[in-house]
Image (cartoon, rainbow, N blue to C red; front, side, top):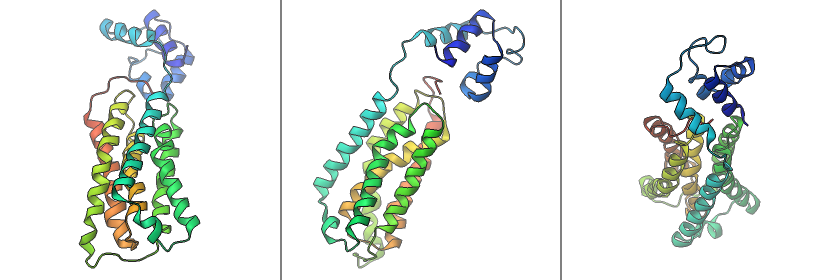
Length: 245
């Protein structure tokens, strides 16, 4: 029995104790279930809410990592297909050191795959690790560039912005579907948005031959960051199916 199920059972029996109160102080989802003063004294609880909580607590616990792992595999498949269709020109044209180019690619690959597991893991600190991986990915994109400007005009590179957005649509939709199954967390939503948009960054790492930093900042990293913020706003608008942490 996990702490969430224990609290629900004790809430139903009117036997909340100090351990339940301590758990509720760390878990916003469980704290929202407790009436004022419920941890210290008996308090009326809505019968319908209590019945719903008991049904939720009685459901078999499934491995949390199954759907995030499927999302990671789908991101990998989408990135591989897009690299094949768009052709990996930059892998041959880049004059950056091979180890730096490959290092940035590995970090981006980690963001889109392992990042899904970190962002959707039940513990609070794992989404923070996903955000740290996202920051490392952005730094890798800038460090691995060779500085060559491939476009005669700056705005000719706008197709990269479109690529990032389009390749993020499916991963972001799937990520939001998984996010409504857990309690709302801005950090978790931000991490899901960034890893979803990271698919486009990974594809462009191999495809885009424009290594000018202004191009990378405006047409690669800016839409990536905007999609991360958009994920937070979209998740806020969606209803929550489950208040599991």
